[in-house]
Picture 1 (cartoon, one colour):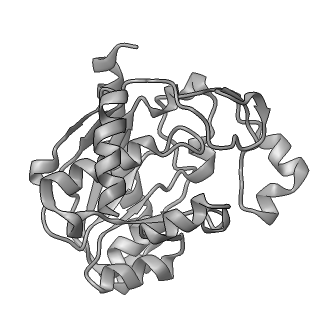
Picture 2 (cartoon, one colour; picture 1 turned 30 degrees about the vertical axis):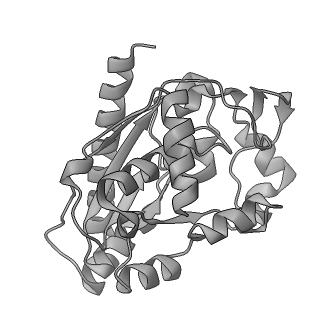
Length: 252
């Protein structure tokens, strides 16, 4: 794991001229990190964040990553990611990791956000998903918002084509809400999830924001739908505002 983090620090940080801010305020876990998702199948911003967090606070501070069910089954890549602490996303998995004292990283927007068209590159859209808040409330842990901009410029997504995903049935069979038409290196124009690609050297900026601690916690709070909705909106709004600031700073 440390070898991969060191590689990300040596390669990805300079390649993307990456800057990660706010790490000095990170406290000991367990924590639930919540971020916006970009770059389709490329997770450069995730590795940059993890590498800088490792450098600032050590390996124990690096969170487990929750990923789509299909990720651990990918040839070669899936096995490597599993060894690095990536686990299939589920409330049970997150609860178990947090209860054991670990921290967890989630991207509520999932594939729908990661494969949105490039015209919406700085849009944060969790698509109404609020399970991350229920998890945090039930476990009694704070949420640390992680806002990132730039990773969606590593390829060009012409359109996310959610209608095609429904027509093909992949939304039901594989929980994939997008079937994008994208342009990347070396694959050129691709329909469907793009294979691992050579990312363009887009600048990446990441802000790790102050932890959000909710007034209520426990099973009752997690079961209160109106409270969950309000908490989820707070987190999403905080990340959305931060991404807007980052995009304005970068002035792409």
